[in-house]
Structure formats: C-alpha cells, structure tokens
Length: 267
Image (cartoon, helix red, strand yellow):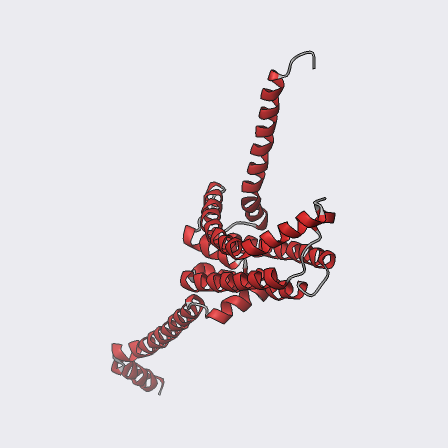
C-alpha cells in the first residue's frame, strides 16, 4: 500500500513541468513590476506638482504670509517674468501714491525741523512739491538699478561664502523680498490727513517694521537658494553694509590724518 502511494507521488512529481514551478514567480514579478511602476508614476506626479510654477496671487500671498515653503518652490523654478510684473506694478502704484501725497499732504514745519525761517521754509516746501513728480520717477528708476546691482552683489558674496545658487534666483528673491512695501501705499495716503509729527513717527515705525520683514524674507530666500543656514544667510546680507561702513571709517581716518599733516604745529 505504501509502495503504491510512493509511486503515485513520484508520478505526480514527474508530471509537473518547469512551467508549473515558474508560474508563481512570474506572477510575483509582474505584481512587483506593477507596484514599482505605480511608485514611479506617483513620484513623477509629485515632482511635477512641486516644480509647477506658482500663480501670480500664490506668489504674493505665499511670500508675505507663508514664506518658507513658497521660497522653496520659487528656488526650484524662479518666476522671473512674474517677479518683474509684480515689481513694476508696485513701482507704478508707489509712484502714483507719491504724486498724490506730494499734492495733498500737509507741508512739514521746516522752520522747526531745520531751523529755516518761515518764509524760506514755505518757498522750500513749494519747490519740493514742484519737483515731486521728477523725484518720484527718479526714485522708481533708482529702485530698479539698485535691484539689479545689489542682487548681483549678494550673489557674489553668497558665492564667496560657498553658496550654490544662481544669479537669476537671487535676482528673483531680492525683488520679491520688497513685497512688504505694499503696506506703505495705504499708509502714505492716510498720513496726508494726519499732523506732520504723527505722520513722521508713524512712517518711521512702519518703515522699521517693513525693513525687518524684508530682511527676514531675504534671509529665507538666500538660505533656500544657496543651501545656507540662517546665520550664513544673514552674513551674506550684512557683509556689504559692514564693508561699506569699514571703508567709510578708514577713509575718514585717512582724510583726517592727511588734513592734520597740513595743520601748523603752533595750532
């Protein structure tokens, strides 16, 4: 009886073909291949979603109120055209605001601030109002010049510190870091209805807050663009200013030394 069972089992084993053994392995390979393809497709979709360009309103809102993830996406695909459009629009609105405030603003009391006699202070105020359109236009042009050269300088300093970003990215980041200045526009209009002392104090405080805000945005952008930590990004921002102050001090000391050499000893 046992011999019969052994013969039947041997016959069944002999009847199985190599294909019967390979079939489960093929199925497993196909399943694994499908899973790998699904993972690859998900990664591709996720990568495309991350690298997709931000929309106009997404850039403005993200830079102002959600800067870290927004700057990360901007660094991946710097929106140069949109940034130029944003900066141009802000410059035009700021230009119109300056023209309005110069025409309707309350004149400053130059007699108290600068010690100029009242008749001359009135003449000086009128001259400033007459030159306001030209000054506003020159200010807008100066901003674009500063944007180009200072972003190039920041890129050179960042490269000196070991950064790996591009000049285009720094140019875009520097332009978008000035977005908080949009809050100055309604404030300038509001100050035309306030007294000169209150308006000056309010503008000074607001400018300080917006300056700090802009430095924070620029720090985040440079950190993401060049792979820095926060300290090194701040060093990149303040190095040009520190070098300028140092050169100014050295120049003043040198000038005073030269002038002192011409002073007679009897003095």
